[in-house]
Amino acid sequence: MLKAYNRFYINGSWQEPAGRGLLEVINPATEQAFATISLGTAEDVDAAAKAARAAFDAWSCSSVEERIEIIQNIIAGIKARAGEFATAISDEMGAPMRLSSTAQVGSGIGHFQSIIPILQHYRFEENRGNSRVVKEPAGVCGFITPWNWPLNQIACKVAPALAAGCTMVLKPSELAPVSAYLLAEVIAEAGLPAGVFNLVNGDGPTVGAAISAHPEIDVVSFTGSTRAGREVARNAAEGIKRVTQELGGKSANIILDDAEDFARAISGGVVGCFGNSGQSCNAPTRMLVPESRMEEAVEIARAAAAKATVGDPKAETTRMGPVVSEAQYNKIQGLIETGIKEGAKLVAGGPGRPDGLESGYYVRPTVFANVSNDMTIAREEIFGPVLCILGYKDDEDAIAIANDTEYGLSGYVSGEQSHADSIARRLRTGNVHINGAGPDFAAPFGGYKKSGNGREWGVEGFEEFLETKAIMGAA
Image (cartoon, rainbow, N blue to C red; front, side):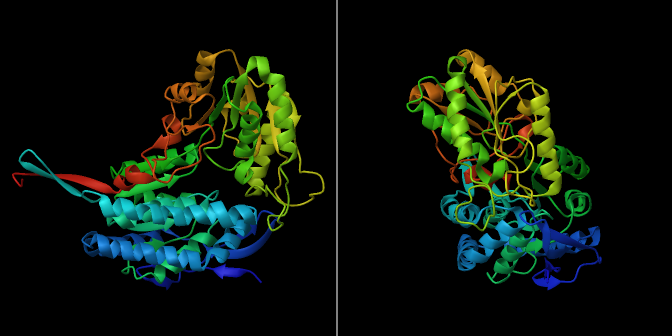
């Protein structure tokens, strides 16, 4: 029997949707439905947005202490139900339970935890000359979030918005809505005033468009594809809304000749690309290696790819689960075929499912070598476990190749520390990881170029939910 998640959380209570449409939620490991959600309408968004507007005056004037107490309650609620969240994320988007229990759930908790010290120490007012500069809540926020890191990408919007004193309407991805529903249940028990947080499920063309265009919504924060980001911006333009977007990526991973452990840097780059089944916008999908060491790099990458155990997300030995949907699977297969046709050298993987897996949206961990940066697989975001290895002549060539992309979300450099740092400073990306450094919730996250605008995480992410007012003569 399918589990029903068919109500919406609006104005502090679980309400029946305005429409009657239902959508089955598919487990990508089995290709079978395991739950249903209701498909929201513009009428549902209108009710949620008006509830958020009505709640704004009181919540925007709440104290720092009140906000911290609510956030701590949410953290405790997620921790108490961590197992449920991990299972839901694994079922809805295919993450292996090990990954779901640690990085997927852990990152969601981490964003709520990291906002507390920012809120505690932030200066909301300062005197400048004879004026007082005041930072105030930006208003009602509309959040449209993706399926690949569902709790993480909701938390990094909801946590700073609550901390800033904003109210909100959330539309999670219809492909991975169950973890969002569980979070709404946690928030419902956290003591938050009615209307501050609202959840409406549905698809992008209906609910997403209604959120982007709604006159009561002041800020729209979107995470997803660059294509969908354009539509969000168009829908929001009439209202001159603030729009922040975290979009696609095609991140370069530059392995310098002076990397302390060349083999470790290569194998780590393979693991990084294949993590979360390659479904991370900041994945290091273009590995740049010295031309003189291409064959060495290929053999190391081949061996690393062979260790990427693909299978049932519930199995303890599984390192890589399926991709999220049939549409995504077909897109990846098409791009793998294109890579072969365009002349890239297939080192590992290739078209089709891994051996022994007859159902489920499983993709063979794939490595291409001798890729040129004008090939389709080097330019398009594949969003699957497909790594491209490109050769470079010298530092200038590596930097030119890395920056020759319409994206600019992240970058990676391995090498002698000062050398790697000098390269990192010249990459046109919002983030750069040096010598295997991991994510940092205290640092801003976001992209250049078509990877988006605005920032999430850290103080910069918090400030996206604040407006600046100058009061002359007040100081």
